[in-house]
Structure formats: structure tokens, C-alpha cells
Image 1 (cartoon, rainbow, N blue to C red):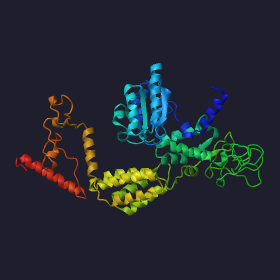
Image 2 (cartoon, rainbow, N blue to C red):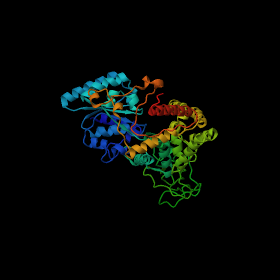
Image 3 (spheres, rainbow, N blue to C red):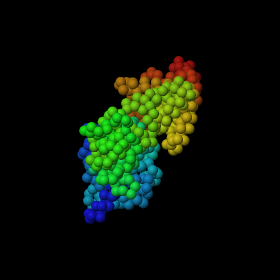
Image 4 (cartoon, helix red, strand yellow):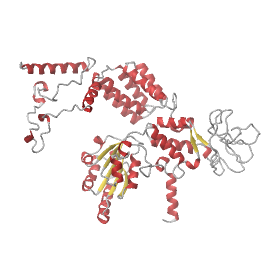
Length: 525
């Protein structure tokens, strides 16, 4: 590689966003997804043994799907080819597949094709991959934010292992941010940035498990601050101005009166007018200093002096500005977030639309992610409304879809409509209680065999085992019902209420019970 190519590569690297530069290179650097990447877990064992088969990564944005694909690229001995379905077409895919076959024949080495946003490929485009996946020419790693059972062809799914990614926790996000601020090679370590615990906790909370959003906010906040911008017509000094004999540019956030300078300084951060320099910033000579951009709390001491000039503190105000989210009622422990969400859900459950809409407004104005609210509404529609109003789930899903498509501020209208409907809908938790009790029975070992007449009888030889024999097709019965056993035990899980549409369901179930009782008594219909 010549000097020109090296320079070009360096320029490309500098242009990459912080989130891309900070992608982990090894398993040890990777943060999150311990449920399948922790010590002894399946995918970790596969990676360490370099025994990767086709994989589907499914999860929300910013949780590490693409990052893990690049970790795999560094661990595997296979040829690795990344591709994004947003910009790639069938022609490009066919060229990659042809090259993969040629590489396998020439070198005996398979190709790992990482297809990001695989759900953007339609069914026909996905079908192009199938023969080479089936023959082992390529190992497909697909990443998607959409449920793969709806967005990816069944033949591809059947040849792949699906790994569901979870949103990163607040501690995961904090770890990612701290690493980016400390890394002098790929991160912002050369700028000597100190982040306050309040700002760190705020970003970890409001980013909703999305590390990319957190790193983007950090990068915007740091690089856009005057302390790192050269003054007009001057050469760049990382302190916001010249580090030599000229006066540096002023900073936007003066410290509280009485604030102290950096550690080891006995001077006030802001010297009185006309006095000598305090260590809070400005020239490194003897002329008056400029105000510090991010002062410590009143009476507090500043951070260690930056080797580049002024120290720089990434505080809560800057965090809010960088991510364009307010910190109303925010506290580092996240209690306010959960208190607002709790009041919101309980108001919905209590059928008070006025209170529910107020708490909705509070959450949105506090910077809550509208997607979080939408998810809670979808859960509520089944957990607390249920079949008392089956339309509730449809409306909640429609609101979630509107949030994804419209975004703030307009999507607050969609959320308000859904909240008003759900609050005033009849309530039932019968379905919630039912699945809870059934799950408890299964977990505690009360498992039951599938009756033979209900077993799959379509495969060759099934009849010889009695599978499917004697099954009665319900639609052939009177009223679409036949009297046959569906579970070999007398259990009751779903008990509908007499509220809303569930009253109709209750009566239907009562009628079926009466017919079953008459059959048992031998009285016929």
C-alpha cells in the first residue's frame, strides 16, 4: 500500500461516525447480549470454534447486530462480504454468489455474506440466496429489525438459526459511552472529555437501549462545542482558540459564582476583570482567560486539565441539547421515568382518559421515546382490555405503526387517540390471567401428552401410530362444534368477564359447556 492509499484510508476512517469507529473488534470488546454470547453460551462457542452456520439477527436498532457481524468477520477464517439490502440489488447479489462459488473451488474457503436490513429484500430477491445457502457455498448472516417470521422466507429461516437481540441496558450504554470517551485511537480520548454522572445516566436512560443514538449524541455534543472549534480566521487549537499569544474565543456556559478551577489549582475559575489568569481556560500565557464552557457545580472542583488546552465537561444540559430531549423530572436512578409510566398505565386501567392523556403529555415533554409509549399501549390492549374490546389491540398496533411512520411531534395525536380509546374501553384481564396460570402449570411440570387424534397425521406412516385417527373436523359439526377431547385433563384457564364483547364470549362458552354436558348425560342435543 502506497502513501497515497494510506492517506485515503485515514481520511475515510476520520469521516466515519463515532458509532461506526467504536464497533467492537473482539468478543471481549462486545457489550450486551449475554443470553447467547456469555461464557459457555451457544453463539460464543460457535464463534470460538469457528463453526458458524447461517444466522438471522433480529432486534431493535442500535443493539449490536451489525457490530456482532463485524466481530464474526474478525474471528472467522472464512471470507467475509458485507452488503446492505437498502442499496443492493439482485444483480449485485448474483455477482457475490458467483464469486463465492469461484472462491470455494479455488481456495476451499466458504464465504460469509452479511446482509444488513435483510427484510428490505422482497421474497424473490431472498429466493436468489437459497440455492447457495442450501449447498453451503455461502453462510448467510441476516440482520433485521422486523420479525423474521413475517419478513424472511420460510426456506431461509429453516436453514438458519435465529438469535433475538435485546435492547442494551442502561449499564451497557454507560460502558459504551465511557469507552468512546477514553479511546484515543478510535474514540474521543484525545479530547480529554469528562462526562458528569447526571449526563451519563440521562443518555443511558433516554436512548432506549440504542448505543448508536448515545454515541451520536456524544459526538454531536463534543464536536459542535466551541471549545473544539477554531475561531474565525484563526488556526485551530483544541481549546477553542489559539494556544499561543492570542485571546481564545469565549465559551457559552460561565460557571457558577465561586466555582473552583481544575484539580490542583487554587484560583477561581473566573478571575475578576483585569486580573491575572485563572486556570479555568483561555490563554496559556498571562492575559485574562475566557469563561469555561461547562463549569462544575457551585463550590465543586473542575476536572483535570486537558493536555490539549481547556478541560471539557459533558454535562446534563449538553446531553439534552445533543439528543434534543428534555430532562424534565429526570433523575439519575430513573425513578421519575418509571413513576410517570406507572401513573400512565394505572390511569388507563382506571378508565380515566383525562389523567392518562396528562401523563402521556408529561412523558413526551420529558423526552420519553414515543416508541416506548406505543409498546406499552400494545401490551395494555391485551393485558387490561383484552376481549372486552378486541378492537383495542388493532388500534394500539395502528398507533405504534403511526409512531414509526410519522414520528414526533405529529405522532402525539395518534397516541392521544389511542390513549383516549383504551382508557374508555371496557376492561378485562381474563386472557392475562389465563396465560399466566397455564405458563405456571407448564413450568411446574404439569405437562400433558398430546391426544393421539390431535397429533399430526399427514406424514407417511402416521396412521400406523394412530396419529390423527378419529379426529373430527369441527366445521362438519352442528354450529361448527363437535364434542371431542382437546386436552386430557379437566382444566380451566380462560374465564371471560361479563364486560363488553367478552359477555358474548362468555355466553358462547356457556352454551358449549351445556351441549357438552347433555352429550355426557346421553341426552343428545
